Image (cartoon, rainbow, N blue to C red):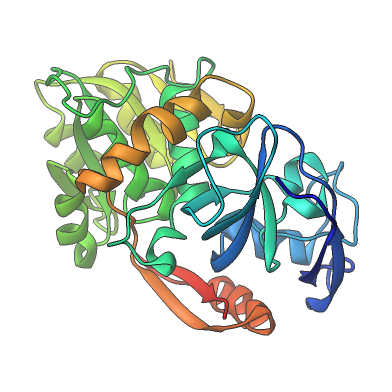
Length: 341
C-alpha cells in the first residue's frame, strides 16, 4: 500500500494549443482497487496530440496530464488489490482524460491505474515494447466484444475455429494490430486492409488475407476475398469509412461495424455503425476479460504479441513533446514510445 503522498514529475498540458510543460504534481492516496506504476515507458496515441491542439473532451479540465499507455514496475497497491505486488512488471491503460483525474494520466513518472486495467508482462518483453499495447488493445477489445458493439465471442487461449470472418479495416494501425490478434484468439478468420508494405506484419499477427488499401479496386478486392464467407462483424480502425461500408453492405453475414471515429450519418444501405469508446472497458466485463483473464497468459505464451513495433524517439518526460509532433507528422505500422530513466 502507499502510505504517504508521492511527489511526482509530470508533463502538464496547461491549455489547448500550448506545448507540454514539466512540473511537479502530488499523487493522492490509492483507492482500494488501484495500483501505482513507476513508469519505464510511455506510448503516444493520436488522441494525445488532438487533446493538445483542441479541447475535444468537454468534461476534461486543463491543466491536464494526457496519455493512456504505460509500462513499468508496481510502486504501490491499494488495499483490495491481490493480483499485483510491489516490483511486478506491468502494463496499464491509464484513463485520466476519461475520468478527469491528472493522477491517472500517462505523461508522468508515476501513474495510478485501476487494477483491472493492468496486466503483468513477462521478463522477455521489454518495457518499451509492452507500452504499445494498452489503448490500442482496449479500443480493439471494446469494439469486438462490447455488448453495444460487435459482441463477438471472447478470446481464448485454445480457441475453436469458427466459420465466420472478422474484417479489420486499417490493420496496421495500433487498434488494427490488436484487433487481428484478438479476432484470431476468438477463433475467427481475419481479413484486413493495409498498405502493401505491411502485409507481412499482419500475416504474422494472424490475418489470413491482407488487401492493399491503396488499390483503386479495394472494394471489389475485399468483396472477392469474402466470397463464400460470412462476416461475424467489422472493425474500422482507420482508412476510408465509405469504402468499408460499401464492402459490408454487399457481404453475407453481419452488417455491424464498430468504428474508432464517429460514423457519418450517410452510410450504405443496411449498415449499422457504432462509435467505439476506447476506455469503456473500465466499466464493463471487457476490462477483466482482457487484462485479467486473457492477456497475462497470452503474453507469457507469446500467442499475443505487442504490435505494431515500438519506435523509441528519446528518453525522459522532456521528449514527450517531440513524440507528439512525430506522431502528428505521421507514422505507419509503428507506435511512438518515450522511455523514462
